[in-house]
Structures are given as C-alpha cells and as structure tokens.
Length: 98
Image (cartoon, rainbow, N blue to C red):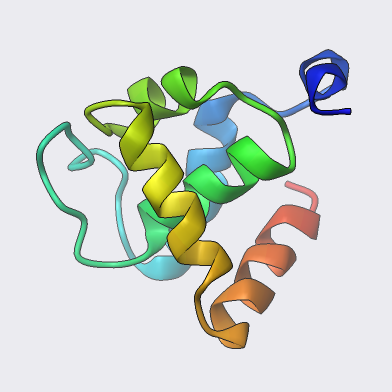
C-alpha cells in the first residue's frame, strides 16, 4: 500500500542525494529549479525517493531542485524507461548500506 510507505523507516532525502550523486561523478549542489542536470544522477535520486521510500513528489522536488512535482514524475518515468544498465545501477545504490 503506497499510503503506508511514509510510515516505514527511510533515509532522509539528503542521505539519498549523498548516496546517489558521487557514483555519477556529480555534486548535488548545482541542482536548482529551472537548471538541467547533464547526467542521470538527479533522476536516479528521485526514483528511489518516490518508488522505494514513498516520499511525496513535492518534497522530492524541493530536495532535488525540481520546479515542481511534474519534473519528479518525469524523472521517475525516465528511469523506469531507461537502459537495464541504469536500472541495475539504481538497484545497487539503493541496496548498498551507507
């Protein structure tokens, strides 16, 4: 049940960002509303925040520098429709204890 996802223990959004950005050789600091990220790191951070940990899209948007929840939705869909290699990278990052 998606409604129960917010009740599970979950990492802070900042921790998700700290885990995802470095393997892509990217810093999260330039993630700002209206500014594109040239790699997949921001979308990869949005994906587990929404799908695995159940954060509301508005919170993810604020934490990752999207203008609104629509950008988060687009990022999640982009990851879901991406290559198997990127999906494996996402799965590995989410599984690794930090």
